Amino acid sequence: MRVRRVVLLVSVLGVCLLLLTLQTRGEGASAGQVVAFVTTPLQTVLTKINRSALGLWATYLDWKNVRAENRRLRAELERLRVDSLRVQETEDENGRLRRLLVLRDRLPLATIPGEVIAREWGWARSLTVNRGRGDHVLRMTPAIAPEGLVGRVVEVRSGTSIVQLLNDPASTVGATVQRTRTNGIVEGEPRGTTRFKYMARDGAAIQVGDLVVSSGLGGVFPKGIPIGLVGAIIDRGSALFHYATLTPVVDFGRLEEVLLLTGQTTQDLAAHFPTDR
Amino acid sequence: MMRSALALVIFGGGLAQTTFPPALRVGDITPDIPLILVVLLALRRGPELGCLAGFVTGLLQDAAAGGFIGAQALTKTLIGFFIGQVGGRLWVREPLVQVPGLVLLSLAEGVARFLLLQIFHFPGSFGDLMLYIVLPQSIYNGFIGAAVVLTLIGAERLRGGARWR
Image (cartoon, rainbow over all chains, first blue to last red; front, top):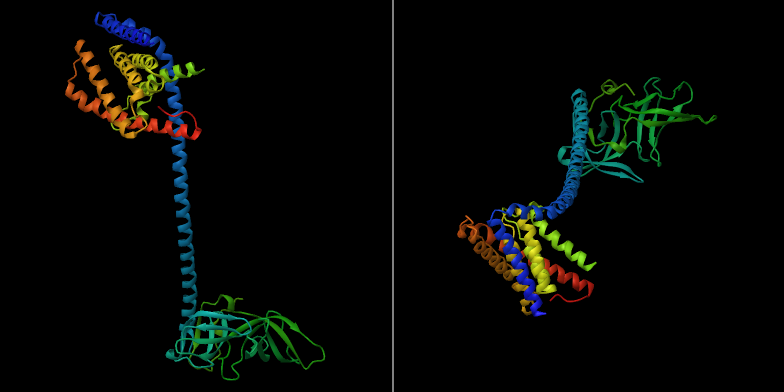
């Protein structure tokens, strides 16, 4: 066994030395060619495998990069969406405030703008506005929006006020149908709707779509502030009065800002509100 | 089957050195894969296969590199034989042995090759060769060899099969 090993070693070393010797005598080219004859096809195959593997690796890296980029782009898209929403929100707020400002400038009485900071949407329907005693807000101060009447202040606190909405069941506002000058009272209902009551049967002649505005009677609300549009007229036949359901001109659920009318006026304010409904 | 696999490993390993270096290069250094292969085979299969593997891989390297055919064949033959002989007495499971062991072997192979090539008036300076080629390659070999041995040990543990020598 040991001898065999030594013989093998010596033989191999002999071959190596022979090859080296051949090369020193200028016959290296043929020795190289013989070895190359065996190695070249193998090298070709290995190179192909190598290139395929590298190609696969490059594809994997590409895929990984694309995935990372995709993730980054998604995050960016998400951020941009949030930014876009923020911009939209700011734009909306700008629009609302601008309209409020325009109304405020046009109205012939003192007003205070207030931001809605809370809502009560249960048995009572009210808004909390960030203006209170410190801003000289008094109880019964009317609250309006650029579209029309919102309600009245029913409670004043140090920094906030509670505005009772028109659709609160306890809310009543003296109102007039703008076209026919039919008087009545707008009341809130427990289900959150409003109706125009106590219209005298004779000469009412109101129609669906008629605008109902504040009458100015009672001294709380100035005259001519839009309240709602007649949605349906309920005629009970023999009853002395009939009534109409109203669609408020103000979307109470979306109100963000209101104007509190701290001043007094006897003027009809209808001209200061939009007429296209 | 086993012989074919061995032959493939030896041939593949011998040629991989000249075919795959870009994938393995760190800076300007490439490991001597055939040397690592020869050492591993010699440790597992003894001096005869170590000697033959060294010869074949070295010869292929010589041919592929276009240098003196037989120089690396000779040095790797000696390395394969030597490691096959003494391998049983080495604690090759220990990384503390593997890394310095392979570094030393690589250095020895480099020195041996240089001495051999001196017979043929090889022009390179010993200092430069050692500093810029042999020493960095030896260190790289040490780590790659250790990684390979540890991988094999891990694979064997997973398989629950024979222990690495």
